[in-house]
Length: 258
Image (cartoon, rainbow, N blue to C red; front, side, top):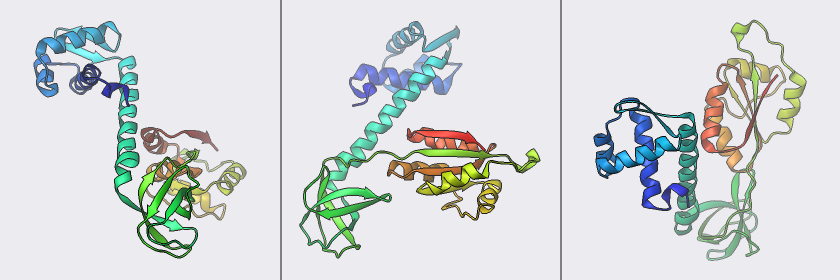
Protein backbone atom coordinates (compact mmCIF):
# COMPACT_ATOMS: atom_id res chain seq x y z
CA UNK A 1 0.00 0.00 0.00
CA UNK A 2 1.16 3.56 -0.65
CA UNK A 3 2.89 5.07 2.41
CA UNK A 4 0.48 8.02 2.57
CA UNK A 5 -2.45 5.61 2.92
CA UNK A 6 -1.01 3.45 5.67
CA UNK A 7 -2.48 5.51 8.52
CA UNK A 8 -4.64 8.57 9.10
CA UNK A 9 -1.74 10.79 10.11
CA UNK A 10 0.22 10.08 6.93
CA UNK A 11 -2.87 10.70 4.81
CA UNK A 12 -3.64 13.96 6.65
CA UNK A 13 -0.06 15.14 6.25
CA UNK A 14 -0.26 14.47 2.50
CA UNK A 15 -3.56 16.34 2.14
CA UNK A 16 -2.35 19.35 4.13
CA UNK A 17 0.80 19.63 2.00
CA UNK A 18 -1.37 19.46 -1.12
CA UNK A 19 -3.59 22.24 0.23
CA UNK A 20 -0.57 24.43 0.99
CA UNK A 21 0.78 23.88 -2.53
CA UNK A 22 -2.63 24.79 -3.98
CA UNK A 23 -3.09 27.96 -1.89
CA UNK A 24 0.48 29.28 -1.48
CA UNK A 25 1.76 31.71 -0.50
CA UNK A 26 -1.28 33.08 1.39
CA UNK A 27 -2.35 30.09 3.47
CA UNK A 28 -5.41 30.11 5.71
CA UNK A 29 -5.08 27.37 8.29
CA UNK A 30 -8.82 27.60 8.95
CA UNK A 31 -9.63 26.93 5.29
CA UNK A 32 -7.24 24.00 5.21
CA UNK A 33 -8.78 22.62 8.40
CA UNK A 34 -12.24 22.75 6.80
CA UNK A 35 -11.01 21.14 3.59
CA UNK A 36 -9.15 18.33 5.33
CA UNK A 37 -11.59 17.79 8.20
CA UNK A 38 -9.31 18.47 11.18
CA UNK A 39 -8.98 21.31 13.68
CA UNK A 40 -7.01 24.49 13.01
CA UNK A 41 -4.73 23.54 15.90
CA UNK A 42 -3.98 20.22 14.21
CA UNK A 43 -3.18 22.01 10.93
CA UNK A 44 -0.81 24.32 12.80
CA UNK A 45 1.02 21.34 14.28
CA UNK A 46 1.29 19.59 10.92
CA UNK A 47 2.63 22.75 9.27
CA UNK A 48 5.19 23.21 12.02
CA UNK A 49 6.44 19.66 11.44
CA UNK A 50 6.54 20.22 7.67
CA UNK A 51 8.60 23.39 8.17
CA UNK A 52 10.99 21.57 10.53
CA UNK A 53 11.49 18.84 7.94
CA UNK A 54 12.22 21.34 5.16
CA UNK A 55 9.17 20.48 3.08
CA UNK A 56 7.53 23.88 3.67
CA UNK A 57 9.13 27.32 4.06
CA UNK A 58 7.53 30.04 6.21
CA UNK A 59 7.70 33.45 4.53
CA UNK A 60 5.72 35.51 7.01
CA UNK A 61 2.50 35.54 8.96
CA UNK A 62 0.12 33.07 7.31
CA UNK A 63 2.46 32.87 4.33
CA UNK A 64 3.97 29.52 3.44
CA UNK A 65 5.49 27.97 0.34
CA UNK A 66 6.26 24.35 -0.51
CA UNK A 67 10.00 23.87 -1.00
CA UNK A 68 11.65 21.90 -3.81
CA UNK A 69 12.03 19.02 -1.36
CA UNK A 70 8.33 19.29 -0.58
CA UNK A 71 7.42 19.21 -4.26
CA UNK A 72 9.60 16.13 -4.77
CA UNK A 73 7.96 14.43 -1.79
CA UNK A 74 4.48 15.29 -3.05
CA UNK A 75 5.29 14.02 -6.53
CA UNK A 76 6.58 10.70 -5.18
CA UNK A 77 3.65 10.32 -2.80
CA UNK A 78 1.15 11.11 -5.57
CA UNK A 79 2.87 8.55 -7.82
CA UNK A 80 2.58 5.93 -5.08
CA UNK A 81 -1.12 6.71 -4.62
CA UNK A 82 -1.73 6.47 -8.38
CA UNK A 83 0.03 3.13 -8.59
CA UNK A 84 -1.98 1.81 -5.66
CA UNK A 85 -5.19 3.00 -7.34
CA UNK A 86 -4.14 1.25 -10.55
CA UNK A 87 -3.48 -1.92 -8.55
CA UNK A 88 -6.99 -1.72 -7.08
CA UNK A 89 -8.71 -1.11 -10.41
CA UNK A 90 -6.59 -3.44 -12.54
CA UNK A 91 -5.61 -6.26 -10.19
CA UNK A 92 -8.35 -6.28 -7.55
CA UNK A 93 -11.52 -5.03 -9.20
CA UNK A 94 -10.43 -6.58 -12.47
CA UNK A 95 -10.80 -9.99 -10.85
CA UNK A 96 -14.56 -9.55 -10.64
CA UNK A 97 -14.93 -8.13 -14.14
CA UNK A 98 -14.74 -9.50 -17.65
CA UNK A 99 -12.29 -8.64 -20.37
CA UNK A 100 -11.69 -9.59 -23.98
CA UNK A 101 -8.69 -11.57 -25.21
CA UNK A 102 -7.44 -13.15 -28.41
CA UNK A 103 -7.66 -16.94 -28.31
CA UNK A 104 -4.40 -18.60 -29.34
CA UNK A 105 -6.26 -21.88 -29.88
CA UNK A 106 -9.86 -23.07 -29.87
CA UNK A 107 -11.46 -22.76 -26.43
CA UNK A 108 -14.80 -23.64 -24.87
CA UNK A 109 -16.76 -21.55 -22.38
CA UNK A 110 -15.71 -22.23 -18.79
CA UNK A 111 -12.19 -23.30 -19.76
CA UNK A 112 -9.13 -22.23 -17.76
CA UNK A 113 -6.67 -20.23 -19.84
CA UNK A 114 -3.23 -18.71 -19.34
CA UNK A 115 -3.12 -14.98 -20.00
CA UNK A 116 -0.30 -13.08 -21.69
CA UNK A 117 0.30 -9.81 -23.50
CA UNK A 118 1.39 -10.15 -27.13
CA UNK A 119 1.87 -7.09 -29.34
CA UNK A 120 0.11 -5.05 -26.66
CA UNK A 121 -3.06 -7.19 -26.65
CA UNK A 122 -4.35 -9.69 -24.10
CA UNK A 123 -4.12 -13.30 -25.32
CA UNK A 124 -5.68 -16.45 -23.84
CA UNK A 125 -4.01 -19.86 -24.20
CA UNK A 126 -5.76 -23.06 -23.06
CA UNK A 127 -4.26 -24.41 -19.84
CA UNK A 128 -3.28 -23.17 -16.39
CA UNK A 129 0.49 -22.80 -16.86
CA UNK A 130 0.27 -19.25 -15.48
CA UNK A 131 1.50 -17.14 -13.82
CA UNK A 132 -1.75 -15.34 -14.75
CA UNK A 133 -4.91 -17.28 -15.52
CA UNK A 134 -8.59 -16.72 -16.17
CA UNK A 135 -11.76 -18.55 -17.11
CA UNK A 136 -13.41 -18.12 -20.49
CA UNK A 137 -17.01 -16.96 -20.65
CA UNK A 138 -17.52 -17.70 -24.34
CA UNK A 139 -16.25 -20.16 -26.92
CA UNK A 140 -13.88 -19.04 -29.64
CA UNK A 141 -11.76 -20.37 -32.46
CA UNK A 142 -8.06 -19.66 -32.79
CA UNK A 143 -7.44 -15.97 -33.50
CA UNK A 144 -10.95 -14.90 -32.46
CA UNK A 145 -12.04 -12.80 -29.48
CA UNK A 146 -13.01 -14.62 -26.29
CA UNK A 147 -14.43 -13.30 -23.02
CA UNK A 148 -12.37 -13.94 -19.89
CA UNK A 149 -13.19 -13.53 -16.20
CA UNK A 150 -12.02 -14.94 -12.86
CA UNK A 151 -8.56 -13.43 -13.22
CA UNK A 152 -5.84 -14.77 -10.96
CA UNK A 153 -2.15 -13.94 -10.66
CA UNK A 154 -0.12 -11.25 -12.41
CA UNK A 155 0.91 -11.25 -16.04
CA UNK A 156 4.69 -11.43 -16.38
CA UNK A 157 5.30 -8.29 -18.42
CA UNK A 158 8.28 -5.95 -18.64
CA UNK A 159 7.30 -2.39 -19.63
CA UNK A 160 8.70 -1.25 -22.95
CA UNK A 161 11.20 1.56 -23.42
CA UNK A 162 10.21 4.89 -24.95
CA UNK A 163 12.88 6.85 -26.80
CA UNK A 164 12.08 10.44 -27.71
CA UNK A 165 14.02 11.85 -30.66
CA UNK A 166 14.03 15.62 -31.09
CA UNK A 167 14.22 17.32 -34.48
CA UNK A 168 14.72 21.07 -34.91
CA UNK A 169 11.64 23.21 -35.58
CA UNK A 170 11.34 24.86 -38.99
CA UNK A 171 12.14 28.28 -37.53
CA UNK A 172 15.59 26.99 -36.54
CA UNK A 173 16.54 27.26 -40.20
CA UNK A 174 18.08 23.80 -40.49
CA UNK A 175 16.84 20.32 -41.23
CA UNK A 176 20.14 18.52 -40.65
CA UNK A 177 19.47 15.46 -38.52
CA UNK A 178 21.09 12.06 -38.12
CA UNK A 179 18.68 10.16 -40.34
CA UNK A 180 20.68 6.94 -40.14
CA UNK A 181 20.33 6.79 -36.35
CA UNK A 182 16.62 7.54 -36.55
CA UNK A 183 16.04 4.92 -39.24
CA UNK A 184 17.73 2.23 -37.13
CA UNK A 185 15.73 3.24 -34.06
CA UNK A 186 12.43 3.09 -35.93
CA UNK A 187 13.34 -0.25 -37.46
CA UNK A 188 13.77 -1.77 -34.01
CA UNK A 189 10.64 -0.19 -32.48
CA UNK A 190 7.26 -1.82 -32.08
CA UNK A 191 5.49 1.51 -32.56
CA UNK A 192 6.50 4.88 -34.00
CA UNK A 193 4.69 8.07 -33.00
CA UNK A 194 5.21 11.60 -34.29
CA UNK A 195 4.26 15.03 -32.99
CA UNK A 196 4.43 18.02 -35.29
CA UNK A 197 4.75 18.56 -39.02
CA UNK A 198 8.55 18.62 -38.85
CA UNK A 199 8.57 15.22 -37.15
CA UNK A 200 6.22 13.72 -39.75
CA UNK A 201 8.27 15.25 -42.55
CA UNK A 202 11.49 13.79 -41.15
CA UNK A 203 9.97 10.32 -41.05
CA UNK A 204 8.60 10.68 -44.55
CA UNK A 205 12.09 11.54 -45.79
CA UNK A 206 12.96 8.00 -44.64
CA UNK A 207 9.87 6.59 -46.38
CA UNK A 208 8.39 5.88 -42.96
CA UNK A 209 4.81 6.52 -41.87
CA UNK A 210 4.23 6.99 -38.11
CA UNK A 211 1.66 4.76 -36.45
CA UNK A 212 0.07 7.84 -34.90
CA UNK A 213 0.43 11.61 -35.12
CA UNK A 214 -2.02 12.37 -32.30
CA UNK A 215 -1.40 12.42 -28.51
CA UNK A 216 2.06 10.96 -29.08
CA UNK A 217 3.04 11.01 -25.40
CA UNK A 218 -0.15 9.36 -24.18
CA UNK A 219 -0.07 6.73 -26.93
CA UNK A 220 3.59 5.97 -26.22
CA UNK A 221 2.90 5.60 -22.50
CA UNK A 222 -0.02 3.25 -23.08
CA UNK A 223 1.94 1.14 -25.56
CA UNK A 224 5.02 0.92 -23.33
CA UNK A 225 2.86 -0.13 -20.38
CA UNK A 226 1.82 -3.09 -22.54
CA UNK A 227 5.42 -4.11 -23.20
CA UNK A 228 6.03 -2.37 -26.53
CA UNK A 229 9.19 -0.42 -27.35
CA UNK A 230 8.25 2.98 -28.77
CA UNK A 231 10.03 5.69 -30.72
CA UNK A 232 8.54 9.18 -30.55
CA UNK A 233 9.76 11.82 -33.00
CA UNK A 234 8.95 15.38 -31.99
CA UNK A 235 10.29 18.89 -32.33
CA UNK A 236 12.42 20.36 -29.58
CA UNK A 237 9.60 22.83 -28.91
CA UNK A 238 6.95 20.16 -28.29
CA UNK A 239 9.10 17.51 -26.61
CA UNK A 240 7.96 18.71 -23.19
CA UNK A 241 4.36 17.74 -23.91
CA UNK A 242 5.52 14.23 -24.73
CA UNK A 243 7.80 13.83 -21.72
CA UNK A 244 5.13 15.24 -19.38
CA UNK A 245 2.77 12.44 -20.40
CA UNK A 246 5.51 9.85 -20.02
CA UNK A 247 6.59 11.16 -16.63
CA UNK A 248 2.99 11.14 -15.41
CA UNK A 249 2.75 7.49 -16.40
CA UNK A 250 5.81 6.55 -14.34
CA UNK A 251 7.42 4.76 -17.29
CA UNK A 252 11.10 4.87 -18.24
CA UNK A 253 12.05 6.98 -21.24
CA UNK A 254 15.09 8.47 -22.93
CA UNK A 255 15.45 11.76 -24.81
CA UNK A 256 17.94 12.13 -27.66
CA UNK A 257 18.81 14.79 -30.20
CA UNK A 258 19.37 13.97 -33.84
